Length: 74
Image (cartoon, rainbow, N blue to C red; front, top):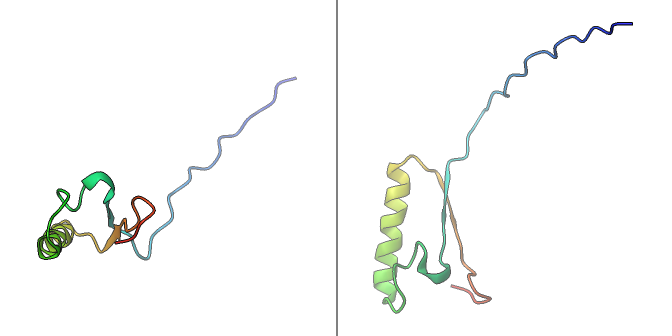
């Protein structure tokens, strides 16, 4: 006896009412920010502002900033 298998209907991705475009900024071991250990607070602020500007230029509208890299807090 032969069984007929019908193809499943093609699934379309859902339409999106909004979109998340985000960047993750890693702080552990100075991966992304700050660029090196020992920077002054004002240098760290300037670097972070530059990263935020770059994210905005790329069309990101959210940033996830890692704030607890090694059981401490920024």
